[in-house]
Image (cartoon, rainbow, N blue to C red; front, side, top):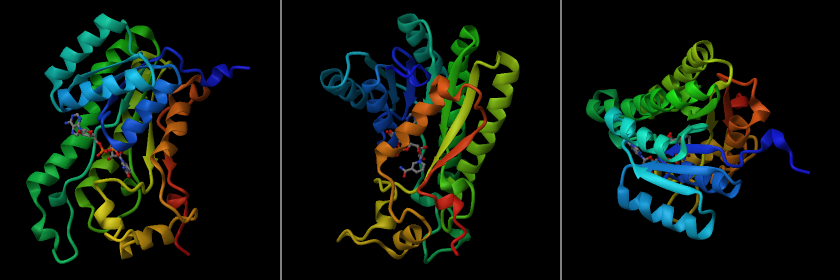
Amino acid sequence: MQNSLFDIQDKVIVITGAAGVLAGCTTRYMLSQGAKVILLDLRQETVDKLVAEYKETISPNVSGYACNVLDKAMLEEVYEKIMAEYGRVDVLINGAGGNMPGATIPPDKTIFDLDLDQYGKVLDLNLKGTLYPSITFVKAMARQGSGAIVNFSSMAAFTTLTRVLGYSNAKGAINNLTHWLACEFGRTFGSGIRVNAIAPGFFIGNQNRALLCNPDGTYTDRGNAVINHTPMKRFGTEDEVCGCIHYLISDASKFVTGAIIPVDGGFSAFSGI
Ligand SMILES: NC(=O)c1ccc[n+]([C@@H]2O[C@H](COP(=O)([O-])OP(=O)(O)OC[C@H]3O[C@@H](n4cnc5c(N)ncnc54)[C@H](O)[C@@H]3O)[C@@H](O)[C@H]2O)c1
């Protein structure tokens, strides 16, 4: 018997940063569940390649556009195209985000070496890159009286991770933005519109591989420190974010808004002793 609480068949889902690791895995999962998924990412050729691949291997219900989440005019253009083709947007997943080397403080440097330009870019990408798509796509949700937005926070938002300054500040702001938009959209546009976030723990990807793993595959001191602080004693695998996002965009969570759910193997629950 179909469990309709979790049914996302035919939902129109826009995913930013859809060529990324976690957002890409989420895209494939949503397609496999019968949703209509629209990929947004920076480069046209990357988007076209992924759309062709997913059409062939997962579902015909996929399309995509090159779109910079920091370019409001471009977002508006893409929004109009999506509305012309689909007539609605049920879900926005704000997957575009990330870190830059200059916004972190390497072991042999101090805060005086911070690259303020890169620090600003990290704040912009994560914070404005979540705000701008949200205020663009919520227009359709407001008209429909329903919709769900899912943001990506991080463990860096809750307690201090040494070295990771810009990204921590940005993801702390994402937690605040998630609360803020949940209140604003719920109060202004109605209870059918919800804004939540997931806070992934440590998943080894291109951005953090060198920090966590040695070239021979063993863990660095930092990698071991993470594992020792994770009750499950392992890193996450990319597919492990999909279930939580599925919950947050389905009717199973229809009284849940402003929540930031850790998907972290217990990292955020553990005091370390
Ligand atoms: N991977 C992890 O371990 C991890 C852990 C915690 C949080 N997160 C967060 O989860 C989210 C998704 O992570 P991911 O692993 O898929 O990231 P990723 O780095 O693999 O991919 C990010 C994607 O965003 C795109 N992008 C960058 N700037 C853009 C812009 N201006 N406009 C549009 N697209 C842009 C990139 O092209 C890339 O495809 C990010 O916010 C990330 O910070 C990731």
